[in-house]
Amino acid sequence: MDDVATSKSPQKIDRSTFTNEVEFPTIRYRVKPTDGSVESTFRELVPKKLALAIWEYIKSYQTTIPNFPQSETCELLILDRSVDLVAPIIHEWTYDAMCHDLIDLDGNKYTMEVPNKSGGQPERKDFLLEDHDPIWLEMRHLHIADASEKLSDKMDTLMTKNKAAQLQQKDKSEMSTRDIQQMVQAMPAFNEQKERLSLHVEIAGKINKAIAQEGLRDLGQIEQDLVFGDAGNKELLEFLEEYEDDNIENRLRLMMIYALADPEKFEGENGAKLMEKGNAPLRKDKQGEEETWALFRFFPVLEELLEKIDKNEMPKDEYECINDSTPSGRPGPPSGGPGRGGGQRRSRRTAGQTKGADDGHSSEPANAPVDLKHLGQRIFVFIIGGATRSELRVCHKLTAKLKREVVLGSTSIDDPPNYITKVKMLSFSGYGC
Image (tube, rainbow, N blue to C red):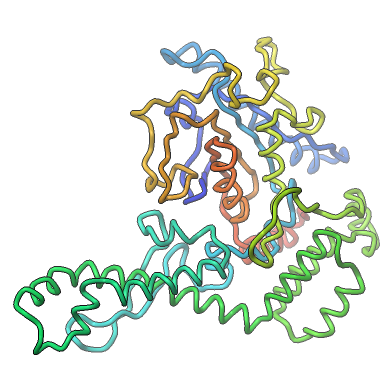
């Protein structure tokens, strides 16, 4: 396995993940029917082959690594991208997702003009949107409207209540020697805070400008209405007629969502394959959850799967457990929900292994106290074919909700533009989707 992403940042995951953390996973993988062709059979068997390979390593660790657990301490779910084809293309409205979808970033690098310290022309400076930036950690999973409001409030507070800012506004002739000393001492920290806040205020401003210019609120509404079954052919045609000069890539993404939501409108072999998914809504509203912000209704399939794992309700005909089916005869996890108490094993973490909030590993919010020792069994998820930022968001959300650290790994973290490029490359190479 290659990249791993928690709700903070991409990292690495491989067989050493379970040796370093001293974890014995319950391993499940998604089972999919094949059409019998060589290409289909190979593609559908990849999750199983990966699950079996990890299981063989785990079994060897039990006999070669001292004190390696002999019963399950965590969960590992192996999926591929076909589990949710909407998540990579629908507009995701978090600050993180919008940055990578709408802003011209070089990976996680953003370049901004900053004042020249010597008083000359402004300089161009590179900033990394990563874990060392506390503002990024606080804002990244928020709805863009929420993030914009909070950033504006933070800037207002800094400029009105910061000691250095207050002293800067005083008449210099009225400043005492002590005032000047305090201002000089406070200025470096103030300038750093102001520069970092200015970075995110500028980015949020560019995002909101792009949203307005490209009519993304209306586009986002029709996208989510198609996914939840509240719109169909009629509403789609009305939208396309009204926005006939819309961004070509946005129209492509919308048509891809429509193809998944309303497959009977497509003829031929491709339409027949889509028809196998049926004509039901791609999502149903989650009971008991109301979103404060518009266009925050969408959730990836992964959220439902994680909640089923937590309740021990994973359908066995769709998600096979290697621990149950191997010749060792080792029992699977006990009923009643793994990691939910009832005398079941917790993840093997001690106070010495507890990671800080800024190390890029924990899925807990950066500004929240994280006592991993008292969380339930961890859940590892690996998605073959790329993960999305909406899936990062739900891992962050469910770590707090389920009181279980959720770690998301994948072969890559894909934003809509590069995901669509990958799909095009598949078509050009003759493999199809």
